[in-house]
Image: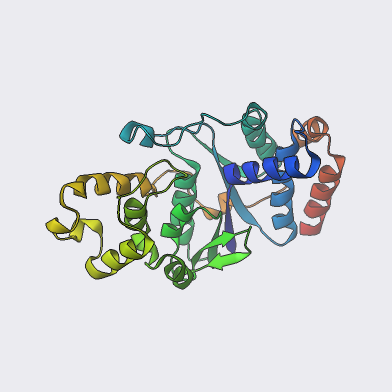
Length: 275
């Protein structure tokens, strides 16, 4: 079996702004419907075991470590209003959801990948997000990252080709070059090529000679802490917990609220196809 792990927050943003560009207006649950249809397409395409990670709140423990780390400031009210409805709608659809509070959705994806990859019955774990943070979770061809936007599937070789370092050095790489999306700047004067060169020469930041970073060493280690995803969140015990078995009784009410009768019929057809 394959396990599919989906970045629900990314998908919500993607559908919200995609719908706005297309319709020039914001439907109350438009982005939620978009995410549900994306998940349904995966199920119709053969996905049997899947989970969706969401940021129930944007802030996490990392905000206590770095004052400039990303927050929920600036998120448009029309988008923010769809965060919790997305979680509720997915649960009613029968999909496992991990709403994160102290941790982030990325931590949930990393933890779920770690749990699932330990099961010998799992042939491949697919992490559906373009977020470069998640590249650190890739392992050979067993745990891969799927970028829906570019239709790219990144195994370990593809990660190294893209960033110049293997997956296990991605936190170190991001610590040096920074991540503007997450709100930490990296170290001045070290770009992507310089970072990969240093890491391939010395290994992890902890192994750098003292003179390499000088008094910026502690800052680099702090940024690495921000970039390193947690892999020990106790999200589920068995991969079988992720098997989709169809919608719950609550989905009929949700389909009415969403104003999309087509998705209800499509889900019913998917259940019947599974037998």
